[in-house]
Length: 561
Image (cartoon, rainbow, N blue to C red; front, side):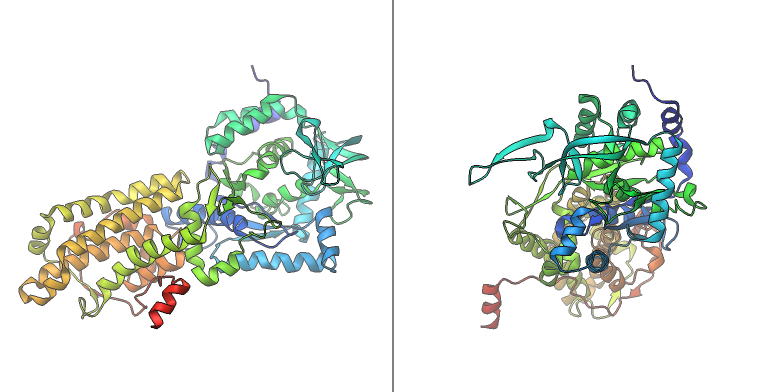
């Protein structure tokens, strides 16, 4: 029988009282000791897709109703060291690297509403407020602390989390069993947080809702962590003499707030915690996107801190796996870290978005391969999607440059064909199928379904041979049906692809003259041929080439010849 604190029981049982809250999604804030790579981009893309889908399904086209936060984590000893290595002050170094993460978000259309830097004044106010509430609630005490500390991971480790590594010269080094980074023995007086006293609260939070941690694989991993043995109390401050680059503990200039407590409070900062006025209308977060390497901090420390401060934990932690490169772990030592800025110059911003969201699955590591990326982008974006639009909008088949209306008799005739029936069936089922996949965070399944429908549209197009219909004046009405059904399929797919490739989808929808106010989920539930009279409309003047095929060096030479 799990016993809970009165505070935890009250908070967790009243989660339903937060149902009035607007949608709030977060990325982890990114540590500025290194430049952005595709792993950082992937976290942001997941959150952006969740946010965009929520907006589309709720017909939200203006900022303000929903919240999406991201940012940078800029404190701690690693930042001190990185700044020194780069011959810079911590302030200048953090500004430079934080700007790169803002550029990453802008480049890849990460549509955040809030960008939190832990060096911002409002964040410091939020940290101080949170600390003082923990202290008021009796959840902070001072004690001498000793243990193995990993500077790279910014955390203390237990004996069971350590390994011994034999160096080439025969020396033995104690390292973190998980990250492989070296550790050092530290003894110091710190402020402590009584994590053990909240262990039952954590078990209840994880167990009460199967969606508390997604996918289920990571929920089980987290539950195993919490149930394996008593959780140790944790140090939540560091001596300022050792870690000076951070937020000072309120009323104690000898101590700096532990970098993970500081960083986790960023979500409160984004919600307006320091200001207070609108905070209750935003909290708790609906979905918090994290990588599997920080599951412990977000799945144990974070909800424990919140419960101790009388706040509701997040509704869902969405934990994702990592990316390997050509089957190998991505690392600086292997010189295989993939820079998203460099790759976007080759594959375009939406092209790289598409590959990561199409190939990434939350429960298993994804494998980045330039060869596979090129094959997928050429096959699916250039050919299956882009070429289909070009053929419908080309002057040879569509000289009037219209999204033509259709005559009922001609539609009835074409609809008798099996290939037409299959296309109509696919398009009708597409919205609900995508709703299920997006809601379950299975973005790759949504893309699979969309590409399958576009494949069927291409089969339909090839089978009906509109180029032959164009040559016969008596078949003009049937030609209009072929163009109309294909363009309507593209309209539906374009709207449902917006969370994945927002810029390509916008170009597509602009080209076929879909009004900006009619690009939400409700607009794909009724198909044009089922809505009665459909007036012909002119196509837009945008370019017809949605995505140009990526040519390898050998192909370029062949083209020149």
